[in-house]
Amino acid sequence: MVDISAGGHLDKNVLPKLMLLQMRWTECLHGDGSLRDTLTELSELFHARVVHLHRSCTRIGRQRAIASVDHGAQDGERPLTSTIGPTLLSCAGIPAQAGTVWTLEDLYCSSSGFDERSLRWLRDRRIRDVAAIALDRSESEIDVLELYLTAPLPQELRRSLEIVSVAFSKAWARRQKGRLARLLSANPAISQALTRDPVMKNFSPLSTSNPFNLTAAELRI
Image (tube, rainbow, N blue to C red):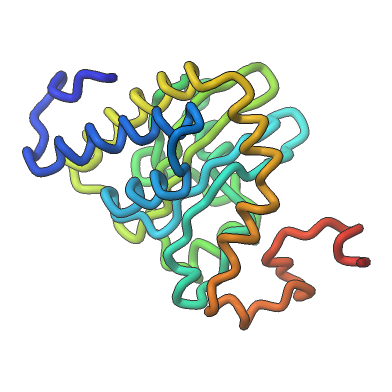
């Protein structure tokens, strides 16, 4: 557990929530809790419309979702189909170290670094800022936790997020052996569960936006 009292003062009302959030994150990485519920708590604490956890292969640009929470989906808004975390983490010009958090607001990244689909989604969802936490990285892969925000974080919440990023990264490194492999293998079920809300009936699984991220073989079937 990270010492949440170090390096500055935090709102006393936030401290218990941070402690509980850290505990639940650690529990779910050892198979004793719900990752989706933990991400929901994270989104509520930091007022994020979307929280997305994924693994990205930096060599080929392939991304695999691990889990997501999208509050906008309940209102029939377009689901997230293209993440920007890896691009955001590369904007600093140096490899983002595990446990660090980077935001669009801080880096003023050039929009040329993002594909048009991502930029259109950010505009449509009125996302003003994105915070990307590097949980772990190797030469070829990086695990990223992203928060999509409709406004920049207040300073006190930014400090809290920096603490969470360190705690989450440390717990991620000590996760139960095989836990990530099981989460990745369960990803189709997680994705379907996230898009089965009644409001999602307006999205056809065969539409050009491919809201369920079906493969070519699945689309043919």
